Amino acid sequence: MKLSIVVPCYNEQESLPLFYKAVQDVVTKMPIEPEYIFVNDGSSDATLEELKKLHQLSPKTVHYIDFSRNFGKEAAIYAGLQASTGDLVTLMDADLQDPPALLPEMYQLITNDGYDCVGTRRADREGEPALRSFFAKSFYKIINKISQTEMVDGARDFRLMTRQMIDAILEMSEYNRFSKGIFSWVGFKTTYLAYENQERVAGSTSWSFWQLLSYSLEGIINFSNFPLQLSAIGGVISCVIAIIMMIGIVIRTLIFGDPTSGWPSMVSIILFLGGIQLFFMGILGQYIGKIYLEVKRRPVYLVRETDLEQTKK
Image (cartoon, rainbow, N blue to C red):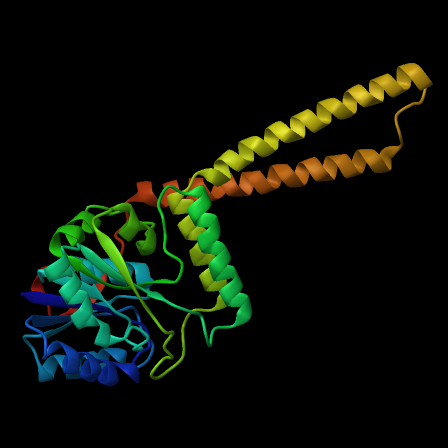
């Protein structure tokens, strides 16, 4: 059985030799034929040079895809899955925060217990900033309430999947990609293994707080239309409040002869309603923007260099 190991890379020159050795120590003891597919997502360091060194050491096993620029991790995942040829495919980060030691157990669950996918999730968020942990937990609570696609709290991209599931994922060729949601949306028999949070083996993370927040918003927009429903509900509530206020003003004028209050109250109401309108227009604009990017049908990524003939463009 052939196992494709897909590894998105962005500025991972220090981690790559350590990662390759750690994974090799595990997979050589498994009854599989490994295939490494490293995707260099426009790194600015010597990541590509390190990948070429690994390829030279094992040209039949280690392959690389070099993007023309940074297209993002989602594009790197998609490219790696497209290039994979294994009966099983695993997705791993190069920083060793995904423990290779879990691979044998994941393999057994698929081959012996009939699972199509074995994912991993962090049992805790130890070592993570408190603010980031709070927003991460809040994201999973929100997305699972407003979306029909269930997402497991603490789930990682690290998972082992069958070829049937990979082919189903590749059928979803959308430009705006959110892999955690896609993995859940396609279904198939899935289980999760929990493990303690791991520190990076080298280097530093390229994900800032704002990038993670933006990524979370991408997930909500891609897998839920609740914000659009919220816009409609907000509009109805605003209209009801306005009608009640107008009735109140008319009644007060007829009974007490009290004229309408001065301009401060009027300005406050106008600013309040204007702010609500702009907020909901912004939500609508996000969805329209996603549609705009989809209909342009631009490629998800462009390849500058690769050793895989079927991936060259």
